Image 1 (cartoon, rainbow, N blue to C red):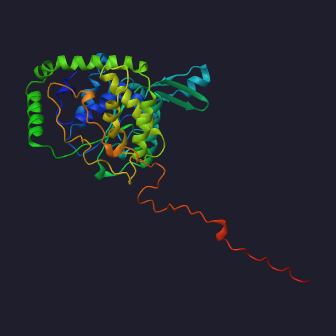
Image 2 (cartoon, rainbow, N blue to C red):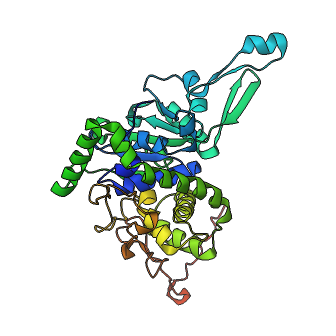
Image 3 (cartoon, one colour):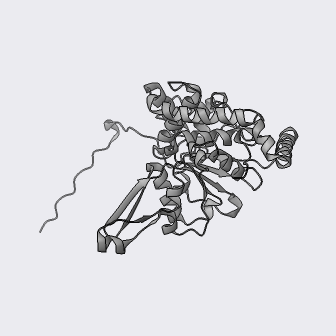
Length: 357
């Protein structure tokens, strides 16, 4: 297998690295959607992530999903003839089966057929792929880290599908000079001698791979407290998000963040660190994001260390709910103030006389 650029050697995209790690620790978060122009290390980061997973010992599981993929190629197929003649269910695995315990990468996911995107997100949310054909069914585990990328200039993703992606990262295309130099130097060193470069980062890679395994094992032991629910509900309410999917994803992401930080309970810092990743693509238009919220293109990552989960930027106070939660929001032109009219102010109306026949 050819050498892959080490995940721990990535520069300039700490939020992207954090989002990928969270979705890897708990794939039921629902995958990561990355928006940004070409040349921002989207596919490089996804491939590097796959090399850290336990399945990498078996040659790695990085599965690329082409835009021309059919539903049968994605979910697999059943041999109906064998089932009818011999009563045996023969399953031919698809891309979802191949990507189990690995990374499924969809470049330009906004150009993929909506039906396939919907199916992908269903499987990611359940961790199981089910195939049914003419009263014959088959199911298999599909614990997948879904990574989708899109360039908004080539078309938007339907809001219904956008909301179903767990985490969202928007990459900038303008980097500070120092970050550009670090990225270019690392890439040139890797291209000059991939083996030596990979060996240099091997200890950090091994340590991160072990942390992922340990975090996955710790995940079920971390409970959600009442304070966690209150904090998450407040952030989602302030962002005016629809439904409760954001609440569920934020709790899962905060738990994964705590597990990566080797903690047995969720801290406020864990929730605040993942809040913008969860809310960026769900926030209602009237709930403007804080201008000081971190962006993926504005922070530098260390060349020899992956971004520490407990060092992510916290959410800002502007995301807190208003003091008077019952008051109509500013700009709510559809709301009418309630009026109470005293009974004394109502005039008595004299009944009409009945018409004489």
